[in-house]
Image (tube, rainbow, N blue to C red; front, side, top):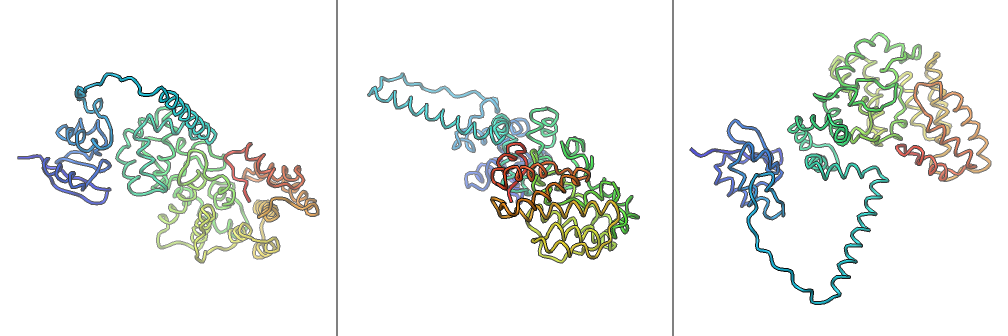
Length: 436
């Protein structure tokens, strides 16, 4: 009896079961391609372009892949398939008809090297040169980039899940680990914040100290459960616990946005954004349909934070109140006169009072800079006073704002020239976004 095969096309539909002859006929009708997968009876799925796995698991398909599927792509699979190249007739070199062809060829080669050099320098400046070299060496890394495309999708996730063993081996090596981490983080924080075979510390990377060491859904469910009796006091301003859940809820989303995308991250664009995603999913899973009033406020606040980070705040009514409503009001203010309305409904105690003072000061500075290239001379004195006050208060707050403070101070130093200050600070903090 002939062996039968199933073919999975675009991770969505199936062809077969087919005999080997029917597989060839289906390919001749262009019903599937190299990126699709094949599986025999009770055997694993293998992509047609995974030459080594095809040779290992389905040697009877080697000829189809090598001579038919790859013939039009100019791809050599001799080393991967274990076959020998056919002898080829080689013509003896003939004398050039004209001596002018040599200089022309030389010029073309020279131009090619110049172009490659320019591209290489550009990639090096952007920090992408090592990534490009890594993709040239690692075909699967290139496949991950292709599958990801412009955004996270089901095909990319399936590719990563299918190649976990290979990816985990790459994560153990220093050079390849850096290249694979952005894709691994994308999958981990799309799901539950974990990746089997990689520690929470490695997933976290070099994040700011106030952020949790573990931002998986399981860790957040534990934080929410243990802090439940503090939620009411947190919302009415009586208490600002020095704990990770409180820090996350009070986190200014503009602070995250100016640091996104962070090096080593795709989507989410940073560890802070990843923590927000897992925190809101954990709260929803933990409380279900029996969500308390405080939990609803927390979920609304986190959804609003994520929306600001992505510049896609949903058009919905957020159930926020108390301190978190006041904080969101400050962060969302479009003019300075609106700030005084934000604190009317709260009576913050120490801890919360400092949080509001720093947030109001920074928002006033940001509003003074938004949409401008320069600060007029008559307004520079007021800006300098705000920056000085911010410099005295910000370092005592849990959220590190040193780059922002130095940027504001540089504007004052540059006599109000925002563009020059941006250029100088962008060189010092290349991962930050100082545009207003």
